[in-house]
Length: 81
Image (cartoon, rainbow, N blue to C red; front, side, top):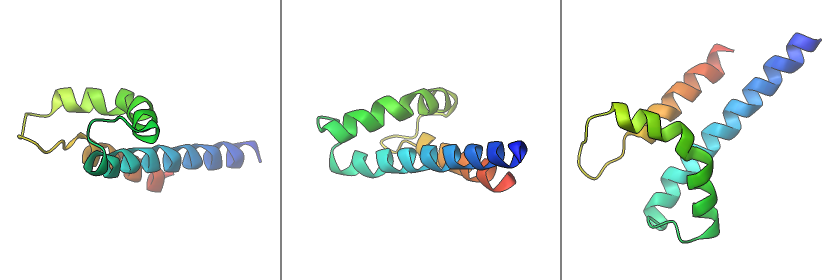
């Protein structure tokens, strides 16, 4: 019973992180400067995940691929559990 709860909690956490990253990606099209409260929260919540990935990726112009990479990794982890 304890292991089942732990796996369910980890899956829930991965879903929440996935939704936050997706929300940040969508908000970057609407409010790229992050002046909105929601945008500022999404930036603060997701930057610790996106910054290391962004440093590893080569510069590709205006498109930030770090969000896509993090979404793929989170989705893979979610389905692996």
